Image (tube, rainbow, N blue to C red; front, side, top):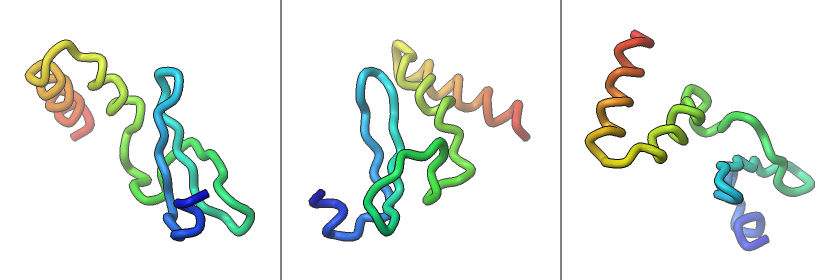
Length: 70
C-alpha cells in the first residue's frame, strides 16, 4: 500500500521461489506476465541466472543467451 500511495508504477516481489511483477492500475496493483517498464527483459532468463552456482557461471550463461538471440 505504501508503494501505491507513492505512485510507484511497477513493483517486483519474490515469493516462493518465483518473481512476481505488479503494475499499478486505477484500482491498485495487478499481477502481469511481463514488465511494462522493461518489456523486452527476459524474466525467465534472469531467473535462471539466479540458480547458477557462481557469478562467473551466470555471466557465461547470459553471454551465451545474448549470442544466441543476436
